[in-house]
Length: 219
Image 1 (cartoon, one colour):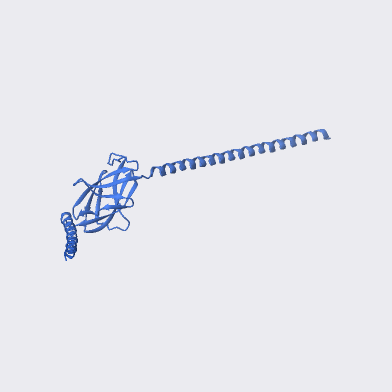
Image 2 (cartoon, rainbow, N blue to C red):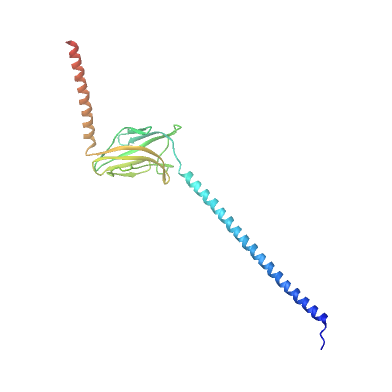
C-alpha cells in the first residue's frame, strides 16, 4: 500500500494547529487567573486603606472628645455655711486647708467660670460634673462621694492629705485644680477656735510691743 505524501503533510499540519490552539487557550486562562489575583490584591489593599482611614478618623474623634477647659474662677463652696472655703489662684489655692471632721463629713460644691466669664453649671443632668481624687503620694484618709454638683468628703482618720478637684465631661476630666491640702480633725469647731485664739495671742503680743515702744518714748 502506497501512502500519499499529501495526506501525511495534511495530518501533520492539523496536529500542529491543534497543539497551538491548546497552548493558546492555556495562556489565556493563565492570564485571566493572574488578572483576577491582581484585582483581588488591589481590592484587599483598598480595603486595608479604607480601614486605616476609618480607624484614623475614629482615633481623631476620640482625641477631640478629651478636650481641655480654660477656667478663670474655681471657688470651693461649703454648702452648710454657704461660704467659700478656698479658691484657686493661678497655680495654687488661697485660704484653706479644707477641714474635715473624723467620722463626719463636709459637703462642698463649686462656683466655676470659664475664661470668658461664663458660669459652668455642674450636675448629674448637666454636661459637666464635679469630682476629686488624691494627689500623687497623698494619704488616703478621706472618702470622696461625688453627686454631680457637689462632693461629700468623709474623714476616716486624723491627719493631712491632698485632693485634686476636677471637672468631668462624660467619662474623663477636662480640668484639674492644683492640689488642695485637707486636714482631718477631731472637731472642726474646736480647731477653728484654737486657730482664732492663736491669732488673737499673736495680735496681743504685737500690741504689747507697741506699748513698750510708747513707754520708751515717754522716757
